[in-house]
Length: 114
Length: 115
Image (tube, rainbow over all chains, first blue to last red; front, side):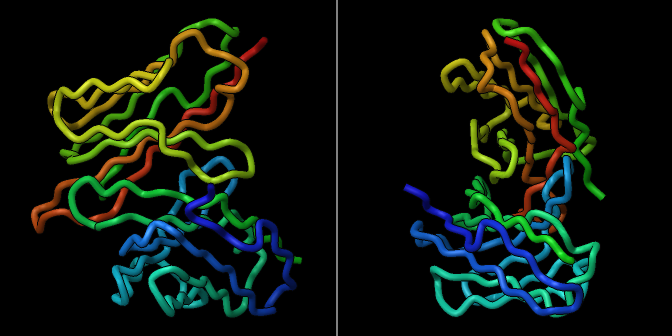
């Protein structure tokens, strides 16, 4: 059974039209991460939540925001998608951010920007 | 910043052959993880390593945490067509301020297997 669930699997949006991607988890993990992955590249961390504490990466554009209303759900909001934001977006969770931080990934959402 | 150098970048092998890939860094890592990613899917954890020198197997896969804590390798024995995909190493670095909780990813090794 899927433990980290991302919806939708495929999302098409228009240039400049806000879009929200969602992630839910059944693992009751404290930490949730959002990554951006472009073709054949390693995932790039955008930000993560440790419980309700939000941690933004220094090079994450302001265009990307996140919300975590409860332990199970986390959302990625792209306020004004540009063509360069077309990518695979991966959600991951881990029990802790300390030692032995094993991250479990969802299947991803493939975002296309027209 | 901290980087992981993963090699080779790609491999094209015959079914039944053994495969080896590795990751190296100039920094010390606490944890090494190996993931496999199929096209259009998220990375799936294969093996997790926690101690220097640790050697762990998962079926046909074997991975080791280097003694210096700066490298790790993954071996796949007797490859089969479903081994095709991108393999990523990922490490949790130890910094002066302690554990960052973040993973550093290698660039990936793309494996193709010819039946």
